[in-house]
Image 1 (cartoon, rainbow, N blue to C red):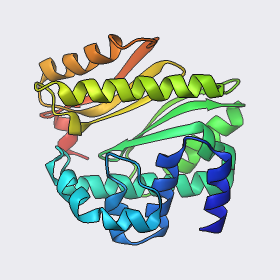
Image 2: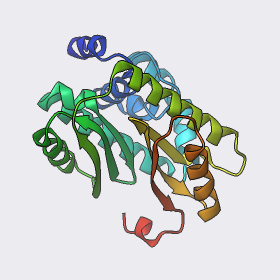
Image 3: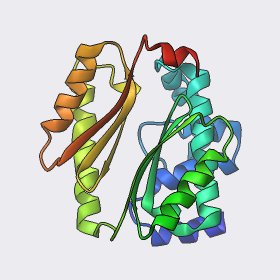
Image 4: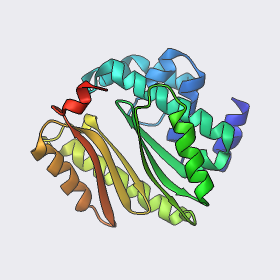
Length: 221
């Protein structure tokens, strides 16, 4: 874990990414624990929360097996990014839902963007890649802090809305653009989720990748 620790010192606020990497390099329990809603401090603590986290995963619309599979895919992509170029690991956010991978972030050149997509497709279980990576100058520390605040506010709003199964949604915010992945029980729930995102301060744009619970495409993934 020495090399990972050095990466962590250089990447402020990227605990979630390190958590996924720990999961990939650790035991099955660690992989399950990386599904936890709240960030944990290291690979050891990840394993401790595995039992409770497994229960959370089982409640998700994708089910326990789907959650574990998606987490494994995420961890393998992180490892490929970190092995190829630390900048890919640092600059690109990943969300995986039933084998569908969202890449979002900002890289310095087109070559990095194409490499990220290429590496993602090399991971087993990936059936679709949604490329939302932009090319240009990366966000400042202040921008990153604002994105984190936006994401936190949206997740909190979803949790307190009794008409939404918040456990089924993932939120990524990049430069004020909110990317939503999840499985909606119906159109009304999907519209509520998008409305919460759009109504959050400092949000510039909302991009929905939400699937419907009864979408026939889900049965073929």
